[in-house]
Amino acid sequence: MKKALFLLTTTLYLTGCQAQENTNAMGNSNESNFTVVKTDQQWKEQLSPEEYFVIREKGTERPFTGEYNMHFEQGTYTCRGCDAPLFTSDSKFDSHCGWPSFDQGIADGAILEKIDKTHGMIRTEIVCASCGGHLGHVFNDGPTGTGLRYCVNSLSIDFEEVEKEE
Ligand SMILES: [Zn+2]
Image 1 (spheres, rainbow, N blue to C red):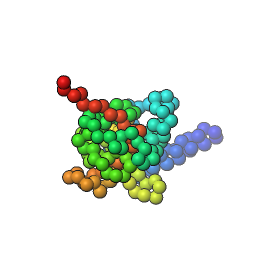
Image 2: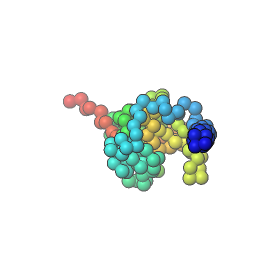
Image 3: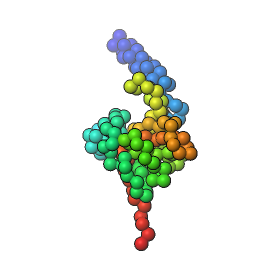
Image 4: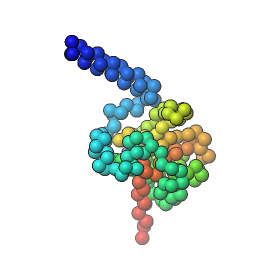
């Protein structure tokens, strides 16, 4: 009898999980496909509490507080979770929204998009394609040719400066 109950619970859990995935996923963003996979404990050891909140719990840093909001050096912005390159400084612009903003990713497939229906809005969440780390959201009100505004938390990214030629 106990075993039957266990099986039933497992089935319910699996069904529930699948239903949720169907509404969240926008196609190829299957979590199991990430090349960098760590446990919550490993992420907690690697990241500061603020970074963990934003990157793994999809939090949002307060606007105008991030270190890369008004940062316009030449170089590459990488994922703070796994160091994958995500954006170049060429795509960064000042959106006045309080978060670092870019008009495109560094390469096709570097960033995954997911439908986010939390907080009573329908938005498009952006995550690192290598580790699934939360970056922010992408909006289609960008002022440049791409028409896109990748609104990113400073806590989700790092910056590698282009080496200046002497
Ligand atoms: Zn990453």
